[in-house]
Length: 157
Image (cartoon, rainbow, N blue to C red; front, top):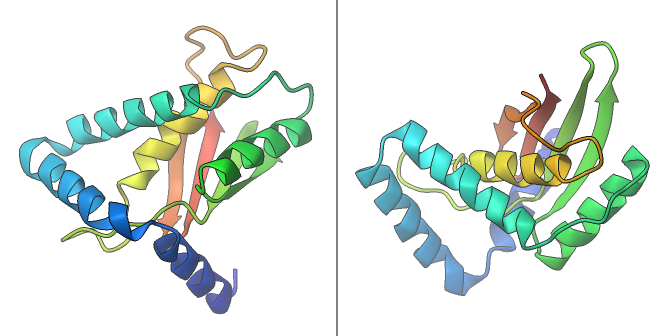
């Protein structure tokens, strides 16, 4: 991605967080960081992502393209950016490219990395609710890369 594109994504991700929520989210994240170990905090944020997805259930989709459309509709309704789903046949995984997720930086975390476990929980729930996604299959959603405004995740074992 070109530098100007990345800068625009970072700007959008920061700008789209309502002013009334910025200080609250920053205080909440600072409190979580001060009172919890990183693994515990990330597990809590994943659980929040799962509940966020449960509040925006997606209908069953027969194709990856249809699922991407439904995910983008839900994300747009929540002002949570947009997603591109790409099948990686070589790795037998699904690449999730999420752009313009809300970005709130905290002391020691300029990139807003707290959003990564939230996205992991969000997509884990959505994929798990699709046909064939039920049960404990050992398939997970995990972060591959994070920059302000752009998260790349992988769904697969």
